[in-house]
Length: 241
Ligand code: PXP
Image 1 (tube, rainbow, N blue to C red):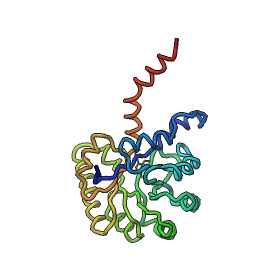
Image 2: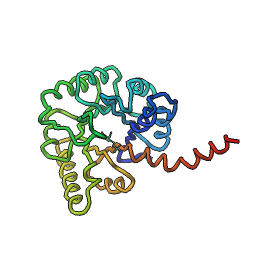
Image 3: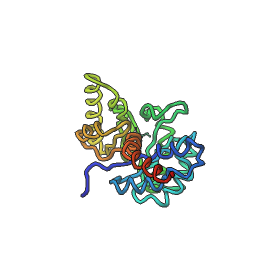
Image 4: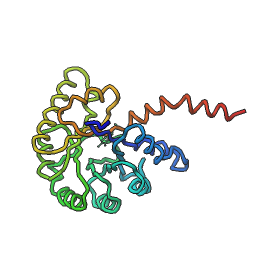
């Protein structure tokens, strides 16, 4: 069955668990988790190659650029070095994201207006070789317009703030998301969303107008642990005399 909203599974935190022992363990195997995600219904795999390499490594990008069975979406900072990697490994999509070394996760959206001059030639170079570009932004009309002027193919709205808010503040943030999605669609941009989405908010995000794609990572890796712990311990118990 073909779904309307494309599910991108972000496997960064599979790599976090591997890297927490300095990459010395053979588990969890990233490619296996990618294949399992696809079996579960992932229509895209998303990875963020961070400058500090805290989770995804360059070798992961190399491997997935060859072996990923569905579309590959590379989240990356707008730096010349990352453009070199994107040109070499040719993911289907590049999602430009802001990146700060000290942050726990991507904390806010890109300031496309401020970074316009720097990003414009990068976007052009990548699009010229067939890579589609999405801009990870706050649900702000100003940022949607800047992304449109830049020539992006899509905007990905940062949903992390909305997920964490409660009460009237949450309703207000939802309205910002709806308005920004309507405007992006009107301008011909694809509407994507991601960050912090869990089962509860996945149900709600279905109502975002024109939504074509979501990228979900952390909650899915946690649900996988919750669902698989009993089985994993059971197998270890059997192995021990
Ligand atoms: N989309 C973007 C642009 C992101 O930076 C992230 C986090 O890496 C996600 C989606 C996924 O967020 P989460 O892991 O909270 O589901």
